[in-house]
Image (cartoon, rainbow, N blue to C red; front, side):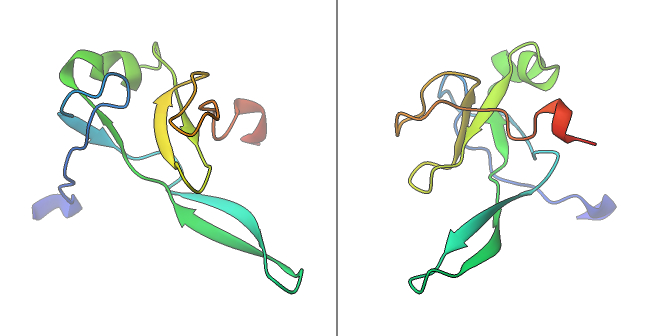
Length: 103
């Protein structure tokens, strides 16, 4: 594919579940977390973050941040959804990188 772009399949819309028509990646493609081994030692691991998929009806609102989305980083969930709402595992979707952490 020319231009260095890679087509990614569209998943369901993170807002309504309708078929996604647009996809984009988070500003940082990995989430770093601390993993504790069986022996009690800790190590930093980076995990990829799935792209955001939205339907045509929600694309402008999500992309312009008028409809903010958050991420659930729980290992059993790891998905995007409406900021502050409960994810399927029950943990609210949160902002991954609050603005005050960007510096």
